[in-house]
Image 1: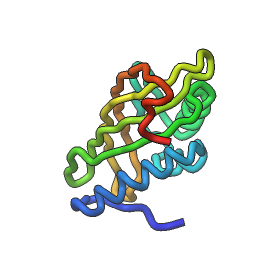
Image 2: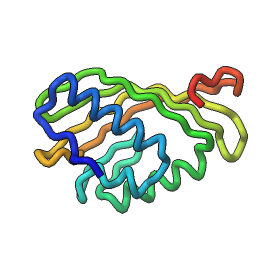
Image 3: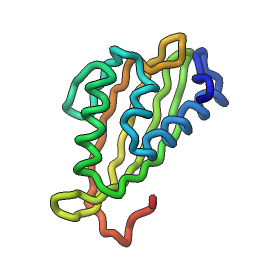
Image 4: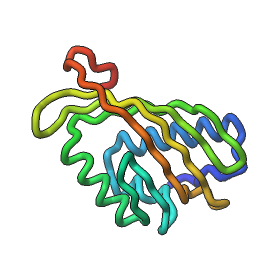
Length: 137
């Protein structure tokens, strides 16, 4: 396992942090992803608010039980010493209906000195799309 990218961020390290997050989320491995967050990390994901790694893992398991064929793209939007904002798009197929969606959103991240994320604030909108319109596979 490589060492975490720690604040204060430069343009290059912020880009690397975003790419590492994109790669981790595309693994769809809740245990791997949760290691990037502090033990008591605060999350807002749309209308859900929760705290801690175990809650993060439970959320991700629920998410990927519903969101099949998930693929994500993250893009650096802005950064400061210990904060990063990204825009993202991801696509998935709804497990219940088979409908494909593209989700557009923003995340704001705050990090501790050790490079672990202590706060994640996410907003997003889902747009129904046809399978043939998918950009990410």
